[in-house]
Image (cartoon, rainbow, N blue to C red):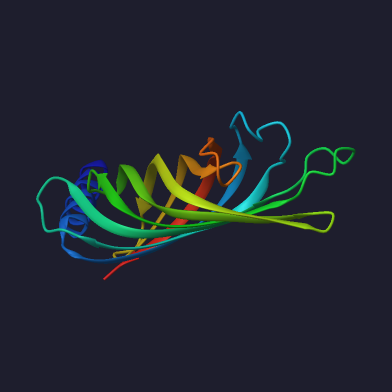
Length: 187
């Protein structure tokens, strides 16, 4: 009995390993909790749920999973201090990047993206709208239970760089941590 269980486990790992190394399109979605950490707004904005979407193509490279991908993210960080009347920040990003991982049933990965991001908000009758460079990077662990579907968790740091006063080139980084769960499908 023990021998049959061990053989089944090894066969499952080998099958999962081979399936993960195959080339193909990957679609992924993740929900996360955004936690502001930047100097500019870290103490003025609260935590909020966000959404990540990604589309990539896993390259046919043995022993490592290399996936160039497009990624998009949405989050609205709320006012943390009701007395100061700071605006909620709706932040959206679109970026390209790379995901590097180890294939297998339990697959750790590193990822990074660079692209464009914009934020908007409202304070009294004034509308806040800024945009600039968006960067993110993080780690993920995925569990493949079905041949094409994986479930996982990730931690990432994301930042948006923009000109705080529009004309004087005073660059500011607004940043937040993302603590999330994800699901992906590979075809």
